[in-house]
Length: 466
Image (cartoon, rainbow, N blue to C red; front, side, top):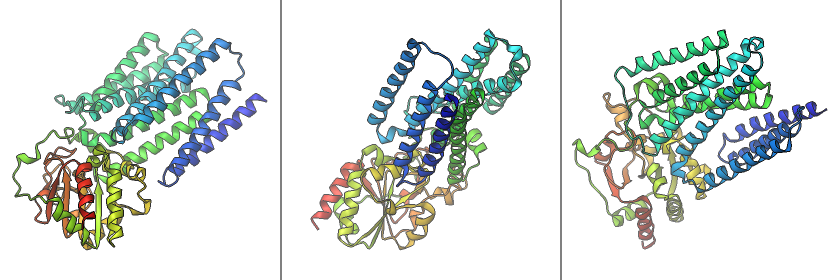
């Protein structure tokens, strides 16, 4: 009876995961989808705790619920306090913890088998253990390095001589070691050596990759974590764990491919090319590509006030300045005066897909006004003013015109086609890819220097006086 109820709990959990993931694909239903999936997870967790066949002492229950309580408090407080600009780092850290859990499951289950009868363990079980250990560990150590790169601790990529060859050799060696463990059964000492080798490979895999490619790497490592969890589900014959792992793995893989397409780069080029030495590592002002001009707040206010159509391009700088509320105020003010206002969203704007959408939704910007790159690009020819706030690489014309540029071929927001281009930045520093932006030297472009929040606040105040 208990077993049947538990299977029903797992079925409910699996269905809610699928429904929740589907709803997360739409900004309007994402929050509800997240809650539905969370409810399914709670049902699966409590079903596993209370509907198993083995007897458990009250002490074990106390430890389980104590751990759940501690994890819940830490997760809740972290999620409540995290700034939107730190969201990619948080995703990377949480993903790393998931990989670590998958690796620990493999270590514990292998230890149980060592104390039992390893000879009776099937090849499938040993394969699941070794695969979960290797993939989970690589995801853990790689995600920690990604976290350090995103928060600036490791600003520059570390490129060892012949690192592609070294990494490939280590990868083959780790996989061969895992196969040896499956064939021979191994022992705990060898398992720990395999664990250490996987940690080293995860670090070496991520260290050479530049900051501009970190979103792709995070998504790829996320798919690794899902795959490792799926092997854990196979090991325990746990349907909901298997379903969740498959969903995370497949979603992470699809997102990785989507971001690679958005940058017009094959995944192999991201992993082995490693462009972009981290945020702001290059001095964009070091190269002279022409002259730049700036614009004062009074002139900009007049220009925007008498425009018919304005397109706002939000970027990471807007998120850093927490200027999403004032940008929405500017939008409403312009619309009151008969100006059509839209937001142009690049697929990887803000360093993570969906980052800008969530940030703008936080200030009650209508989802209908957030227009994707492919839809907004044809409209720039009829746009009077494009206001670029904190975006850089996603509007760089070098992606279209400079074959020598590392971002050449990457689809961009073609803001250079608009009648007037206004770029709000604190300085002339390079973007996340660490390269100069040719847009700044366009004759139609004017720089509106200053912190996004302060500059836009002054712009709003100036327009109100007109």
